[in-house]
Length: 197
Image: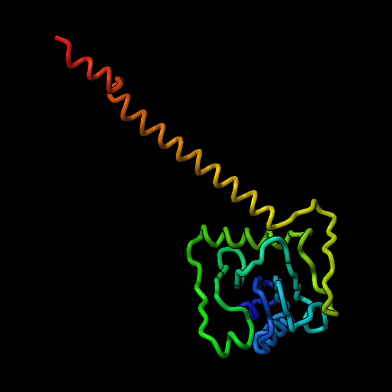
């Protein structure tokens, strides 16, 4: 329960839209308790940040080359972090009138990858925008090196693909070496030896 943790609590959610009043009330309650709340909402948000009851809430939006659809709900930090991926945005039509799914992530490597993903998204100062308390989106001017999260992940994906190709080539070479150098001899050397007296 992040609300009970107060200032030690953390909520980081990524979704397309936030309209469900019950969830908005919970975010307000958590903010009042001092919980640090960061929301990445691409589309509609029916909650304003940085007001008296939402001063601990930051809302960002990233609209780039690709239309993103992940729904990620992260609770806590460190070893106690709980992460869910979901089919649902926090919209009344989803929470009240549809069958939706949220699945917990137990694998520690996957947890880390998702946390790293969110961390990069929150560093996006090129396509990322921050909502002010009037509901307007402002450029993120943090004085840091420009970072476009989608371009970052394209580069990362290409690097991983190249590494996989290299690993497969290395595997192939090692397999070929084993076949052709059994007992320090190639297949044809062993074949020639069969003709010797």
